[in-house]
Image (cartoon, rainbow, N blue to C red; front, side, top):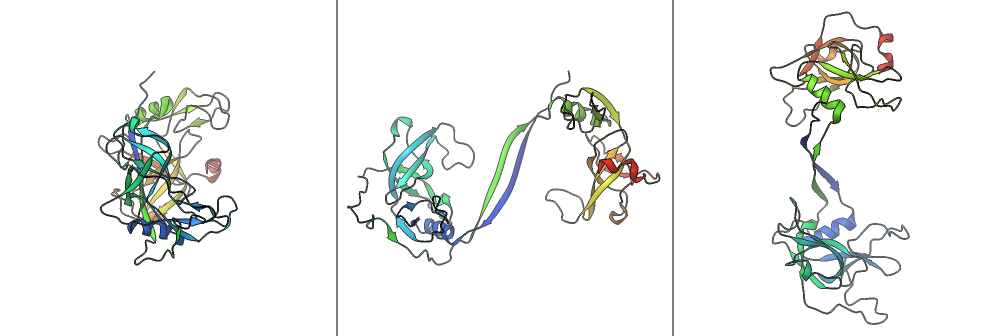
Length: 323
């Protein structure tokens, strides 16, 4: 059996979102070293704040200020911090109920070791030196020797739950978060064989033992019958454009001038269309039924693009089941 391939893969993109008035006030408050929550109709104070009561689903806008000190309600030790985590030395992830709040806020707790952390310990916010209106304006929590705040009977916690308008100069109205996922991808037995064949300028699929369809790229099982596939079948190299789209937006790090055409191509002998770029023809002359062949560049492991073969267009009935 050939070696199964694997390779590191990173998926990364910036995620931009606008903020509601409540979230805007919360993040702008952090920039100003103020922690805001929202008060529900039954008197609970939620930190971090949300726009709707998680119990009643009622909209809530009553902002209140709570203290930067609190109590650890539960925690877990992180012995090996990863990239972009709050601290680069071992720390605890902790749920902290700030004084005046009825819910807990998740953040990092800077402590010398797990023996120094316990449920019920008192902590306070360590503010970041540079604050921009983000949760990272809280650099972390740190141990703090103080007594928990206890409100007097029937005072509603007013001494620690001061009302706030949520109005600030230059409020934060949106955030950009860098989403990233690092993982090791393995294409499995079937696709490893497919990729290795591509390096030899061959397209290899697998035939289902039940319905006898040939799938390219192969997945190791028939998507129709659900049975395992192992019989290899070489297809192509030519094929037929079954459908296509015209790309007008240039992709980052892709050295291809727009507009260009990306198409579904049914290789001869295959029962599943694969994706490929169409070149060697003006984009507005690409059409369904166009006969194409792969173009390889020196040392490439896969076709750079597909170009017209010069053959007559395929009859629609020959590829209509592959649309």
